[in-house]
Image (cartoon, rainbow, N blue to C red):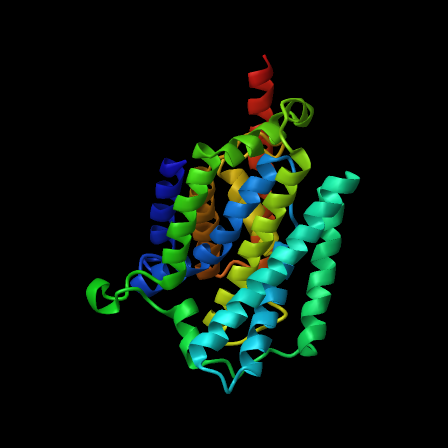
Length: 314
């Protein structure tokens, strides 16, 4: 996988006449990968359990709008307090919707595809309702640092965007969670064989519930961070993000059938999808064809996964 990523970077640099390798473009790519990659870590947990969450893109929009509305309503408060409150509210809304989806999936055994599809439509609708279809402006100026700022500007020369730092910290945390904690082993066990996990004493419903709450909360965090980047809560953002996120997870080697996946693979998958999307934009490939390419990537990864499962079965 790292070899494929390196080859894609080299090809992108050559095909775009060096534009891909320009510093400003690399920073932009890293920032966008950070937003979708952050959600992809939660999605990895969901898919490893054998589930899926189609609502994350809409949650980014809804939570971004909610966070922006809260911050704007606290215009007379200290900026730090307004930002912290808006961030907390955005994360809470995402977590609450993840909790609702997870509870329905776990309690009533309804396919995750159906439940999260409904959540996707409802969240997008609520995002437009909350702000009457118009972006929410007049946010604290300090908020911009969360979406566009850099860590150690004077030392690193504006090389490490804040969203990238958040992604790195999240990767380290979730890599440990999945590989070195009891909860991580339970997630893998539930995805490998749900009935066997139940007989082994694992709380299957609780495990499923938690992974959807985590994913929703990460979508909420991403929504507020993206609003910080735009300096507006926009109900239209996040469209098709769920496909990019799922593609990153699947391309990174996580099995759509559950039971197998790594955070390192997901991170590399997010890098691959991000580089691919950026390269297609630089090459001025029409948006419709970009969707065709993304769909092909997901299909190819799924076919490879199915083939590996057959080999394992033998």
